[in-house]
Length: 187
Image 1 (cartoon, rainbow, N blue to C red):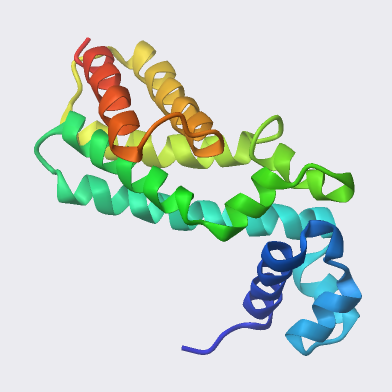
Image 2 (cartoon, one colour; image 1 turned 180 degrees about the vertical axis):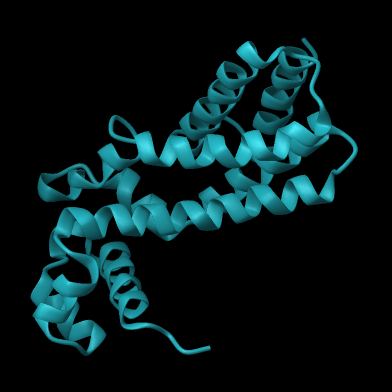
């Protein structure tokens, strides 16, 4: 499968971010690493903030694939599907180099990425809630439509909180979240 120029640029940005920090990512260094001109970098990914959002959203897509696979593995039991999805997401997060680079950044320009996962996480939350809503619907949860969206929002935000700051093993955390979500979704 051929890698697009855009994909090479984003992959180079992720590599630089995980090895040297976001502050070390400049459009000139990125162009050099991807083997393209600086203008090509701007044409493909736009500004540095746009690049940051692209990196985060592409990583989110990988997290959501983990969720999709977990729901596929538990087609008959919503609580088990949630537990498997949370376990798998937290396990994936624990080994994710980009996530660690973003969360551990505590100085200067490196903090530009963190708001994309926290205070400015609107697109991230929206995408995650859309996937979860679509995956929960076939289970016909016993909760009215007016409360289903807030319940899904709660689960997504709690999981994101544990991705950012784990408080126990993925399995323990997932069991707790699934237990709570199961009670709420039963109505």
